[in-house]
Image (tube, rainbow, N blue to C red; front, side, top):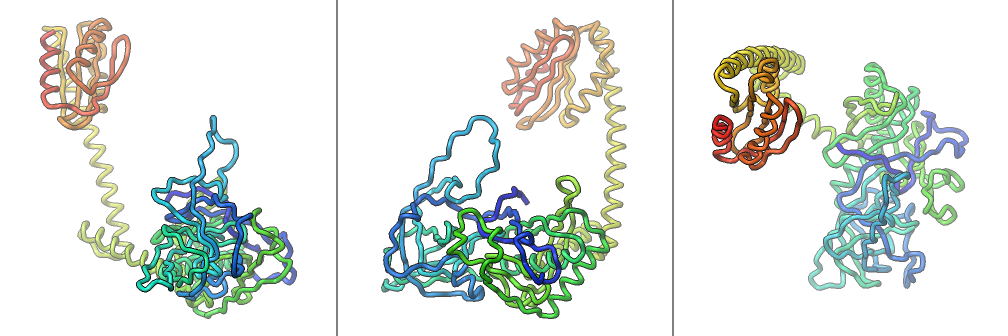
Length: 492
């Protein structure tokens, strides 16, 4: 999984206490980084701050339909504005950038193959990317048309308080439309996101505060970043407590208290006119977040903890999946385990497979040792052959199709004391239509003249050297070049 930390597009935070604090101060709130990028993401260039909005006033991000009812799949609304999208030109930078890349969508640059239109609606059941959660996807269907065709919407972005839909088709302001959300994608996002809130709440009570998190793409693992690596026993306890809370079917509610959590908002979010949402999981957790969430912990289904990975000093990433994604990944893992077991003719029980893989690894290691020893012996024999030929002449050609540069260097070691006094040796490897290596060693004047001949005969040979050795690589041997090189060396 490729990840690059970026600031959230909407607010999200973690509070360290595992229970709801009696007084929630700004010190409890801080922004979390995220890395998930939507499949389609465009920067905004329309001037929304001066755009005239006729008719109904659109709902703001924080009070969207999708945030009020995250289970709503379809919704009829009206187009407020539509602007053609124009990609901004990326600024030229000299040298290495000294500041972090901006995550403001107005400054994000991406090539767009076709026209796009920035559409704002009275309200939206489609969630704009933010809070560590990727953009929803879905469709807009004009209701005024006799045979309406759904318009695919692959990206929704927040711009200040506004929710902007990127559409391949323009729609006139005042057009009535039906929004339909890709609920399979939404449900997966909610299971992962709410699962992360619950996971972080449980870990807060174990001196494992969440420093950041990343939602993986569909089918991939998520992770939370922690200040230290949890022990195996802690991981077992965390997983047990998470799934116990899921079984208890704890209610999850959204609160919008005034005057709280403002320090967790992004810079371009209007603090006076905006809405700060807190996600409350029973008495387990209370955190500011703009994302869509489940209504009860039982809908998370399951939280499955995977492995850990050390990052940045003592920090550690704990990988996890939740809900249907976890079940799918577990099923794929079981099937993969079974396939490995069949290939090794063992049972599919994890201990048996692990033991079989360990035995196989030991066999491979032993085989490599034997191969290395045999190559050294063959190189010694080849060295003796070359030295014998040098007793009668001053040029030798040595070719091995598959043994490569390691073998060539072993041979060079065997002949180095003889060849520099008696002549020149050309050693090469590789086969037609594959890469290869060439090494020339011997008297400096002969090495230089022979290298020139190699470049004439082998069309894709590149290399260099001076004195007693020249080394080169063949990008691709052409038909007849190996034999032509042999004849050229022996004929000089």
